[in-house]
Image (cartoon, rainbow, N blue to C red; front, top):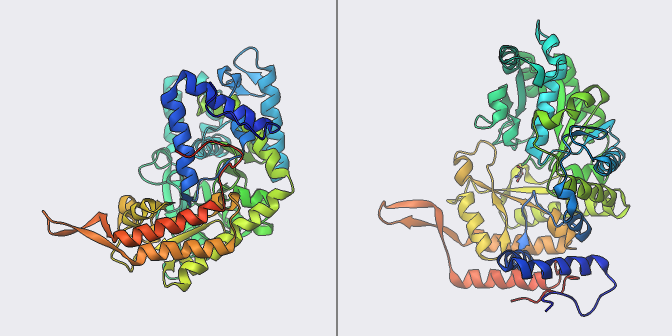
Length: 489
Ligand code: DSN
């Protein structure tokens, strides 16, 4: 008997397909179906402020649930290591063409499974394409799988000496931008630049000084937790002065680029040699990555699989095509603009209630709540907020002394709640809810050690109940996937 099938709204084919799939899963694997539905209910009942998440369309999700997952297609369109790839070729080519159109890029490679994979493909492509040292040119022109063990070791050593200059983790850079525990810092000599300690902003003069001293092969711009614009023209000037390749990781803000919010010197494509992105954050597509580049790097980038990546995921590539198509539609521009208005309203709302945010505001989709002046860690704030129905993640703030596990900050992003239809008034109300929690939050004491905990906290039950009910009341007006009539349990 049908568990989820709607009695109304039968005209909506996506709803029918989606619910039929859940019905089917419920019959074959009820434990899995139940968890999918539980996740939906959880997301319906919480305010998602994770800056790297969103809610993709049913079309994007449906594009992934089919036989494309069975197909192997190592290589790239029309140049595969497997037979029978004609239809996958057409799908991947369509996705790449749409990505090129959306971002005005020379070349698009849509296979990376994640942003981290896209970054690895980009870093290797730059190495292969640009490193000009005696011996390396000859080696890098060869197919890597043709190298002997000795040649490979020679290549590895030459590549290893190259320098990557990226934004430090505490300043908002990503792990793959040269963080010491990431492979980017093991395969390259990683050097970082920080934000200015006073303004918490990028200091282009200082970046140029470091670049002159360190002579990087790669200057990497982009972030996971920096709330301001980047002037890519200035970054390119610095790169050109020292002969570096400018790589931009726009994983977080690609939706704002696609939606026309970031233009001119804030649009990376014109200035960067190579740009990487995820497809699931502000861009609102399936979980995945991509690389966009100038033609010079196209051949090297196309070798991403099998050089770096395991077999491409054609079902996800199909969903990327849907995502790009959606982002090319005119209403995506309005969506992107509303994301930024919302994060600015959220930042204002927090600041006017006395909370600190990094750089005193934001120009993009994220706000970094700074807890350094409070006796709290980001971990405590994250856990307490989750308890009352706000899902956000702890994050380091510039020059954070509490480390990446506990942190002294919380990162908040507005892409998901904007998809849900909320606007600046709701952001102000959310700021009120967050402030209510943070103001009343205390670290618990670890009795056996007589020390304050960095994770456990005390939040008065009456305050928690009040905050939780404010969250529920707000969410009632902004249902998530309302067309999926799945009853609350
Ligand atoms: N996990 C993503 C983020 O939260 O920014 C990037 O790795």
